[in-house]
Length: 89
Image (cartoon, rainbow, N blue to C red; front, side, top):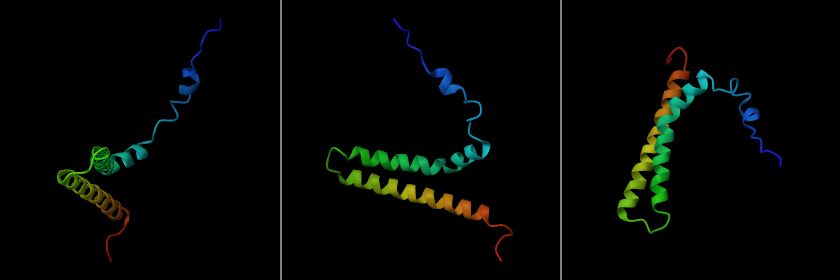
């Protein structure tokens, strides 16, 4: 009988060098409001998959869509403001 060997050592052999950099972690942190708003929007859509949406469901979807768009706009404005050197002319 042959023993079953896991590939854990092969998979985690490079884990020390494959960690995200500080810049990547900062980018994820900046995008977290957008990610959470998108999760809320998907959750609103998922609740209506197996039934006809009620007026309350439609309101929830509209609110979630507005929050997702607002979060994206805030991120774009934040990035645009940070990338303009020297201020406005």
